[in-house]
Amino acid sequence: MERRRILLVAAVLVAALGTALVLVYARGADARAAHRFDTVDVLVAVAPIGAGETVGDADAAGKLAVRPVSRDALLDGHETDAAALADQVALVPIYPGEQVIAAKLGSASEAAAPLPIPAGQMAVSVNLTDAARVSGFLAPGAQVAVFLNGTDEASGQPFTRLLLPRVTVLGVGSAAPQSAAAGDDQDPQAPDRLPPTLLTVAVDQRDAQKMLFASANGELAFALLDGDSTIEPGRAVTAQNLFRRKG
Image (cartoon, rainbow, N blue to C red; front, top):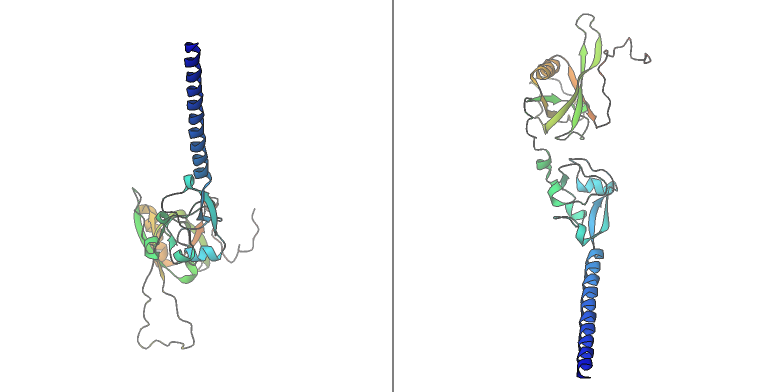
């Protein structure tokens, strides 16, 4: 009889302990689930944002949105307010779905900072007119094709031809505009000229020589490329073949 009573008490204690353990586990699971699904409103890209683009411009173009993100997925330095970052510039491309974080933003001067020169290459700078500089889309790290507008030495006819199919931009800046010489006639109604852009690219020795010669004896123009751009060297375009169909 006494043995049965002891076993009964032991069974009650084990059951109570088991119940307590189940309650503790359930509460822990609830806490973990609550933490997992507890969200924070975070600034997220909903369209590609290019390097050099300001947060204000991206926001005005509808490229940013505030979305709930679970605390487990939050990144260090996440941002929540586009208006407070309006003057900040994307230092690297930001792709749809990415959280906007402080490490990817900086001042305009930081965005224009030159990239390091790749091994085996050199940095060459050329001045571009406003028409040749692809507006404001050039930024360090961009890939560009270089075209030459020149004049054929034998025929005297103007031509345009691809000079370099793909080079990397290291830095972009503005060169001081040259002042007009004394006595030069100036049209007071003429619009102010924008300062020329000083573009620095990474090239090898052969391409550096080609760029410098072409710049001194013609006019360079740059075309902004992306990963899908197709560039094929070919014959120069002249007045004789300007409207000729391919093939």
